[in-house]
Each structure stands twice: as structure tokens, then as C-alpha cells.
Length: 98
Image (cartoon, rainbow, N blue to C red; front, side, top):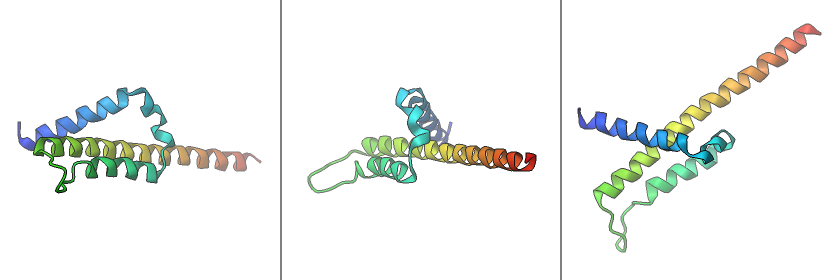
């Protein structure tokens, strides 16, 4: 297994953890800003400053979490499109019936 395969596997494992979290049911209600804020938190939490020393392991763990959240956001954005298309199709059907 290559390093890339291991990284992708870790991202998928983290995504599964998110799905198993009971709070993930509210993901559909998150706004684009909510997603960006959550992703930003993990991207910036391990940024180094003079008073904060972060190991590469901690850095990688945060990147994995951010990547899993990006995956969540992408999946949910597609679900929004599907729901919107369902509503639009229903409206179109209703207007054709009248």
C-alpha cells in the first residue's frame, strides 16, 4: 500500500466516524459558511507560531480531519442539488396537471 493509499484510507475512516456521530444528521442543515468554518478550524489549529509547537503527526491528523469534513461538505452539497431537483420536478409536475 502506498502512502497515498494510506492517506485516503485514513480520510475514509475519519469520514465514517463522522457518519457514525449522531450530530452528523444535522449536516444537511449546515450552510456553506458552516462548512468553511469547520474546515478552517482544523486547517488552522495546527499552524505553528512561536508559542505553539506542533508535531507533523498532529499536523497530519488535522489535515485528515479537514479532508474528511471537505468530503462531507461535498457529499452534502450534492444532496442539496438532488433535493432541489426533486422540488423543482414536483413543481413542474404540479403545474402541468393544472
